[in-house]
Length: 414
Ligand code: CTP
Image (tube, rainbow, N blue to C red; front, side):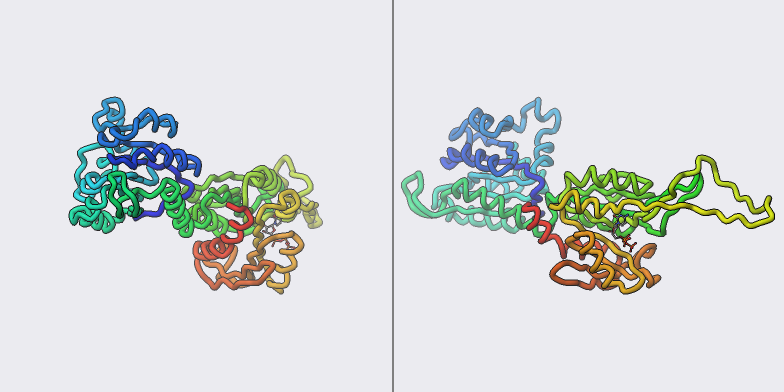
C-alpha cells in the first residue's frame, strides 16, 4: 500500500448499505473539520439509509452514485475520482461490497473506483455479527488485507438487529483518528511535508564592464541537491539560483538571479513566506564600485609604462545576516567553505550570523566541495556537531535534511 501524504487531503468516501450509514453525515463533517476534502460515492443500497441531498450539503460537493451518469462519465468520472482521491475510505463497508472488492467485481461506481485507484484504501466494516463471522466474509476480508486494504474495525457491542457481537462500524471520531494516523505514518517517510523551504544556491556575478565580472567557482550542485532532497521529503521548495548550468529539480520553484543585490532582494521577498532558509549560495563578498558602460580597453600596448588596472570594490550586504535580523523566527542554515581552522571559523560564523545550523566543508581538499560531485562536511549547531562522511552531494543533502527535520517541525509546529 502506498503512503498517504498529509499535503494531499482528498478522500473519496464510499458509503454502502447498512444502518451505520446514518452516521456518515457526521463522519463527513468531522473529516472536513480535520481539513480533508470529501467526495461521497453512494451505492444503491446506501441510499435506503441516507440521502444524497444530506451528504451533498455536509460535504459541499456533489454526491456520485451512478456509474452510468452520462454527464459525469462523459469525462470518465470514475477514473477522474480514482485519480482525485488520496484515500478511498469505505464506511460502512457491507459484506456485499467487501465481497465484490475481494473478487475484483465492479458492478457499480464505488467498486469501479476501487479497482481503478492506486491510492490507499480502507474499509470500516459494518454488518450483523453472524454475517461478519461468515466464513466467506472472513475470507474476503483476509483477501482485502492481503491486497493492502486497511481494515478499521468492526467494533463489538449492541447491534441494530438486537444481537450483540462484532459488526458495529467504528464511531466517526475513531475513523477520523485512523485517517490522521495514516497521514502521520506517511509524514515519517516525508518528514518535511508542509514545510516551506527557501534555498539560495550557486555563485553571484558582479559586473566590471559589459563583458567581465567577478565571480567564484561555485557549481550550485549542493544547493540544487538540497532543493531536490527537500522536495522529495515533502517540502515546498523555492530555489533562488545564481548563474549555474543545472536543471531545475522536479517540483521545485526556481528564481534566477545574477548579482548579490538581486539575490538579496529575492531572498528577502521569499523569506517572509518560508519556514527554513538554507543559504548555500557563494555570494560574492565585493562588487565593483562602478560598472564601466563600455568594455574596458587595455592601455599598455600604446604606452611606455605598464598601466595597472585598479578596481575599487565595495562590500556586498551579507544576505544571510540580513535574513537573520529581519526574520528571527526562520530556521536558518548557513554554509561555510573554509581553507584553514575550518571548525573554529565555522563555529564563530554560526554565532556571528545567529544561525541554527552551519554546514562547513574544507575547500582546501580538491576532491570535495565547490566544483566536485562529492562533499564531506560537518553540521554544527548549538548542542553539538556531526561529521557527515564523504558522499555524493545528493546523499549529503539527504543526511542534512533528515538530521534537522525534527527541529524544523518543532520550531514551525507543523
Ligand atoms: N553569505 C551571504 N551573503 C554574503 C556572504 C555570505 O548570505 N554576502 C552566506 C553564505 O550563503 C553562507 C554563509 O553566509 O551561508 C557563509 O558564507 P562564507 O562566504 O563562508 O562567509 P563570509 O561571511 O563571507 O565570511 P568570510 O568570507 O570572511 O569567510
